[in-house]
Length: 284
Picture 1: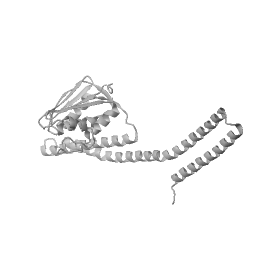
Picture 2: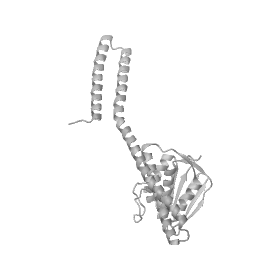
Picture 3: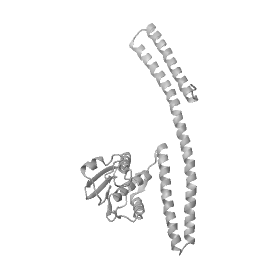
Picture 4: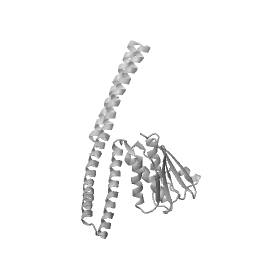
């Protein structure tokens, strides 16, 4: 069996380690036999064993962790190159759509088609940003940044109102939170999509901020106590007839736990659901 270069290094390191241990044990046996089994001699022997273990532990761990560091570096470089190549056509589409919009003033049919192209490119840009975020999150910790809650919620609501479904009533004052911005947006999006998915399209969705407590309330189908107990389980859906994979609230809970955002859900069958987010720990 042919061993790779890395496996050979590990094997040689292991053999060297065990050889060193054998030599050290022989020396300790000779030392203790000739110098006597006193407390001080035991301490000297223990210190020698500890130093040897620490030294070889460092060598072995370096060999084991080196490939992972190299793999992360290669993945980071490859991801950067791919994302750069994706960004070029996306930027080209958006720039040309803006130019065409100026030239097609007065041509309603053409402008409507162009608006659909712009909406699709905006969605593609959003997916691009989420892809960048997901890759970076796997390789490096995501830096937190100050986010104006009122502005962020307004932008997300505007996006969902374009679906032509529910009416959103927002009562949110100025509040800045220090969070992972894209992760926070995805969490809010999941909550708003859930509120829409389990509500009649003519019903309203209320978003309200009281001090640092953000609530999202819908008038949908609601849940009973048994369903509430399972609501954070991955792949669980209170209504199996609805579209989706049932992982939205599991992701929301994971994000909130990671960001120290308290989350509580109250619901009543046939009366709707309220999600409460305690933002005092991320409030700037």
